[in-house]
Length: 60
Image (tube, rainbow, N blue to C red; front, side, top):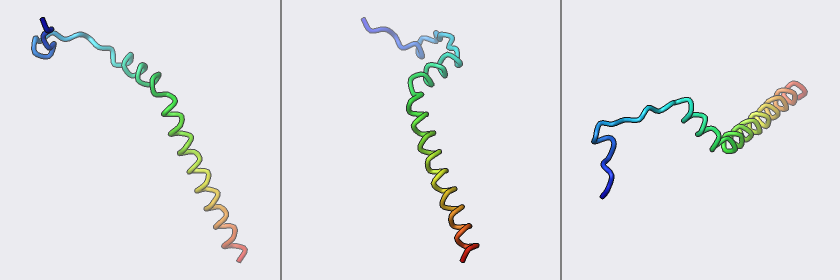
């Protein structure tokens, strides 16, 4: 016999949001680190380009 849907029976189970967040972060930490590394690389390249542009405009 199939189990009834808990949302229809009105019974709810307490959920700890901190535990859910910790589980989510543990599962996806490598993805977040990769995204952060990509953003850092883009930031370094953009800042280097801007600094080179400023230096070259002052020299010429």
